[in-house]
Image 1 (cartoon, rainbow, N blue to C red):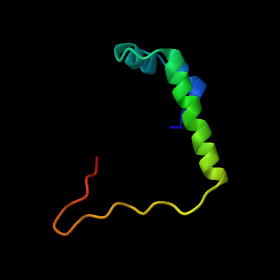
Image 2: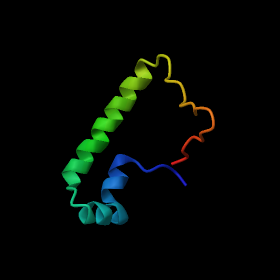
Image 3: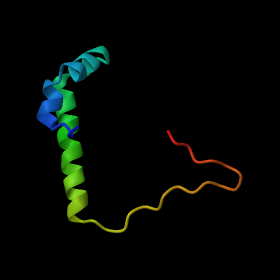
Image 4: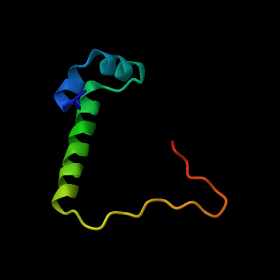
Length: 65
């Protein structure tokens, strides 16, 4: 399965149904996708050191959620 493009997500009936159930406008969702895309693109342009993975304290398990 391929990843969906933003325009495919905006046209997908299941995603639209979830947005409607959560009372999120299609315009708000489109803005969210655009903002996330721009931030990700900027992050790739200035790829610097990546944050370290979270470490469990002694005797604790890391959450997988």
